[in-house]
Image (cartoon, rainbow, N blue to C red):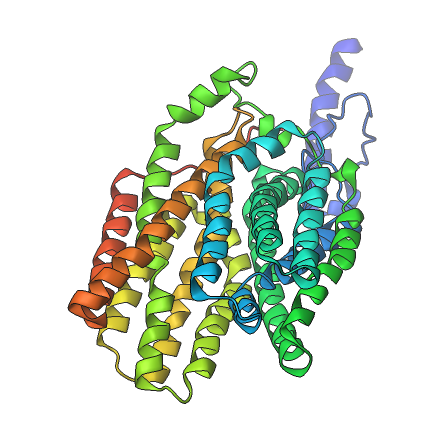
Length: 454
């Protein structure tokens, strides 16, 4: 009897499977055993660092902070020279004051980055920098004496050296490395909008009120800037993101080992060399365009120069988020190469364009390069310093390289323009830009690293 039952059961099971294939509704319902089910790790929600959800207040707070910081910095742009001239300053005094600011900005990049590395709260570092910039603007408006102005310019430059790496650190700590490109692109977009609207608003205030009122407004912008910073929740920022070691390493190096790792980092040294050449070619192009416009269209030169400034900002605001997404999808190397390629093309077009309005249109290429570098500089530095805990220090070092290139650029272009003419000066800058492009093509590695599996 037992053997007969064993023979019948396989046949019944076969009939059951045949019926199930013909009619899905007749399939037996099997209850799942929770103990046998393997739980799946939920994918981290969009815009998170280390799988932690980020509040909308923090995301929008960072948007607003980038916007108002750009507003705050706009007051220290071309309005300074106008303000000093109205105060009956000599050109030598104006040049000396601006030089003090430039020197502090150049020498303060590395100490500023090191300060942000040491300070545990990046929001605190950003707040100190914002208060320093606002206080400098207030001092310029209230006590425009020579010594006070020199001190204010030095404080502003030093605070800016802290503010830039602090924003980058907050951004990467907020969203994590996997989404850093998109977040940095969003920062650049809001900063471009802030620059454009700030320039327009301060220009109107200077025209209808006084140039001194521009600096009162700049000082007052500290209020919305600090409010925006306060909306970024401290618990949403992961302090370990910038210090995490690669999966193969047990722990990140610290102290002198971390600094030594930067000095022997081939990728970081290569990137710094590329940035020196880029700014050696780029920094003098817009001032040279302004001189050419003044000679060719003196009556409309001011409006055309303003347009040359606004066009790249508009391109930057629109394209920066796409640049960040492209860097995450295709890698850093092709995007960086594309941004560098726009520079020599721009120099060639400027050399052979005689129409003043054509010179303005060519500034679209400046916006492309600016959007690429605005995203890629902190992103590539973050990649290259992974596991060292020296992200902000390295970012300051690259900023110093950029400043050296920019400082030499204006002198190089001025000598070429005086001795050979503006046409030859643009061609010379284009050659340097092509050298920068080739340097990227030949020596820069792909720096994007695969994220470790959860």
